[in-house]
Length: 167
Image (cartoon, rainbow, N blue to C red; front, side, top):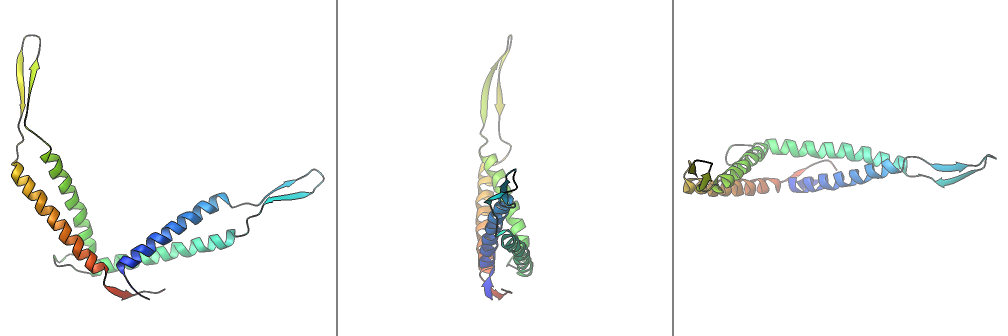
């Protein structure tokens, strides 16, 4: 079957959702229930007839998800982007760059403050001044955001390249 990584990721998500539903079903539908009267008459209250089918489907989905995730991992390690890192390497880089963005945002939220402190026999101002250049941090934040966008675009292009996988 001809596909691309984007479609494979969608298939993994659908299979994981279905597996989750089946697992939930199996937790609550795993026993036949009946009443047995003292004279030995049995009345079936609930009979689970599709347990084996659901169990087999769950086993299939576990294997399929593992296979599809291995395809994703293989393709992500094979595809090299313009920065000479694989897609997998770029995904790790993106996580680190996003952490940098968070740090820049926290730094940019720091303002110079001056607070008057009054004690019993003493009054003074507590003055706090950031030790960094706001414009420099803003520039770094913007350039990191641009870099993130360009890497995401390249990953998206790499994910749309078609290849063959087993059905």
